[in-house]
View 1 (cartoon, rainbow, N blue to C red):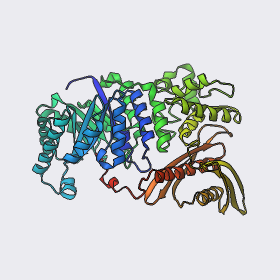
View 2: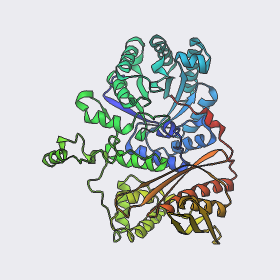
View 3: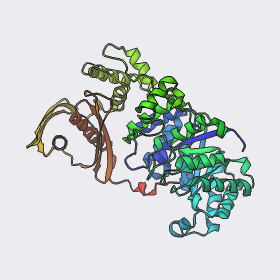
View 4: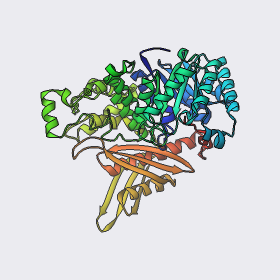
Length: 522
């Protein structure tokens, strides 16, 4: 299907969310879906509905919002999966069913234990069933990059004949290299009948650090859809990074002769949003959206930049949504200015959330000399955790020293307004605070990971804490922000505790989600 337009298929909410520690709540998924819509991605793969009831409900909620992009769900080649996808996505005006089956020799022998003919039969049957439910059907031969070329062409031909409207070629384990992938796509274009009538797609993983390069090689060889994720998150080493591949096509338009429909000025805000929600920090040297992407420290670079920006910048910061001035607002700023800045940063808050965030902003502005975009982002990312009990942190006092144990004295307030005080002693202040929280809330958690970083610059910067804990076989992630790093850690830990207790109140089972074993990567 000859076109100069590249479709951007975002799988942050499916493949990206499967990365360890990146699971999102329904509210967080809806927030990311809104950001992806504003970014103007063409397709949102919202999840794998058969994986769990939670996945099904999230995909359905995103589809029912109907914000513009095609809403897609992933399914294995069986009737139950396909019907669940259709039930989840049918609320969207534009929806897609994405079916997959592995085709490589190693998968055929060790995972599926199926012959070549059986796999083709399974794919054809699934595609035909999906087409009965939906006009837009995508098919992926999993581990295509390690599949024999002649057999891969046979599978793709059968998929097209069965009614697939998009055929996606995945480099599932990040094994291929650009020249080899270029050859694969050119082979398919030459040997598959009817390939000109469908959209040929590419899906790359980053195990060898070549996901973006391999995706661009596929595009150069005829692919017209790229499957990617915000910040390149995903299983193992991640996926093709949306912001990198989009800006490569835009910046090197004279080479590729192609374009996307992405609103590139939304790239940085969306990257920051996903980073904040998942707790996966963006490396400083990350292309396009890292803190150093437009920083110039070397003297010769600074001199060149002063003469003309293009000497060392091939893109403008504004092109990807990075503000020229990071210093924003102040304690005298009004609600209207705050609302505008929140919107500029890519957040969509309702009136209740905005009022709560503005209140926290004013409190922080009274303490800090300078306020930055990062401060606002930190407040908004934690606005859901404020006053959403059953427990609220009222006060925290820490005593510690070089040659002594640390003691944490904290006061919590429950839903009825009753105060509970508790002291705990441990080797360090964070451990003491966590122990006191567990004692008051009568819950026993296992800390799996604790991360702390600065939201902005300066000695008075906010600390952002992220914790991942285990409770009864399930992992939970919490965020907290404060100028006091121990308080930030406490807020993150308390968010997890509150989430677990709210689940109990709703009668939700906290046993391990065995459906996670059915998670799929292509």
